[in-house]
Image 1 (cartoon, helix red, strand yellow):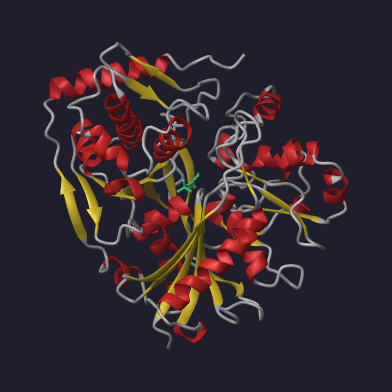
Image 2: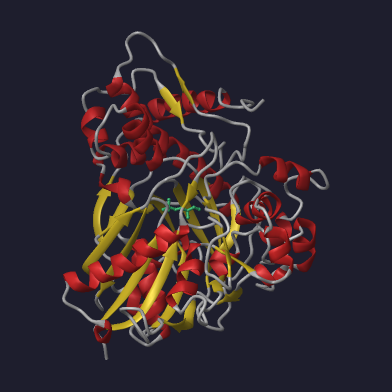
Length: 500
Ligand code: G3P
């Protein structure tokens, strides 16, 4: 049998392919960034063709770096930025519009229109999500209403919708020549259209959104065979055997398979996922109810999720829009030029505020400024924003779960930043723990794909691969922690009601 599994991680800023061995260690990686397109304030787009070309190229990079061919690869896993919506013509393979990214807020008017009858929680009991611009559903409606000819083509059955997992799967399995149009339960649970209990598209909700069912992919388990790479692919005839949205993949990669286990990923945004097992738990504290994973025909696992829109992307913003750093890792050196935030608090409500507030009328604010504040303080306030937002999500998880998390497993790009991780432990008051393989997103997709083809035998096989790398213990005293959190919460209130 082949010795490796490959995972494709189609993320918000880049696409990567990572080859893993049986121990879950990384063998080789390919990575390419794609353009972030900002046509107007609040709009964020990607070019789906660029994404697909990059995916093909990074697969080639990863294979050639380790001198591997398709014969060495047992199966392919796909993980992806969730909610980002692609609509394409199934006869030509051409997208009818750019991908509308999860961060995009253009659909607020559609959200308001749908919320008129029943409020933003109108479908929450069924789908676990409030009406918000974040999810794919309103993005599809925008395309149908604003792209010339899209509605007619969709009604005629010529258009397909998918999140980027689905777009990559369709192209990888042949595109116009028999491509598989499917997604997994975790991605489907981010559309606003999937019934959490039946795991099927809900006809009533589709009618309310006026979206033809023929556009939607088939919903399949996260771990199971979706199809085979087509004859033009470097990986031809290799099964695509696992798909999970990136946050659920990271949870799987952290081996948080059981009820009560959790992880927090520090990427473009932050996403804390808390596994609730086979039970669908509805949050009373601003969390989403979402699918965790489904292995074959087994019962699915559900989760509560605290989604934060802007964390790592605030560092990119300081780099790209203000130019106060020239590369993202420099933020730590700049933050270390000062001892504290100098009284400054930065609330990055660039896409409104997600959990636990769900305020689409919020916009970013930097408050507490005096002549004393310099760019070091601003860098520090930006890092601290990630930790404070995580604190608020953890408070919500603890309140919903009825027990306090005793430690936080972390992963993602920003966990390389020791200053942030120490402040995170300080502001949470519980230890923060990093695993040896921090690429848990890709690893989770590889695990799902490997399980489905017998590369790994069961979840216990995967649990053995998890090893602790570092641990940060809280050092801040309680009074200072309380003061910091009080000031942060006050800063948050300054961001409300900014949309005319
Ligand atoms: O829900 C959005 C999330 O899936 C994006 O993750 O890592 O691409 O920022 P990331």
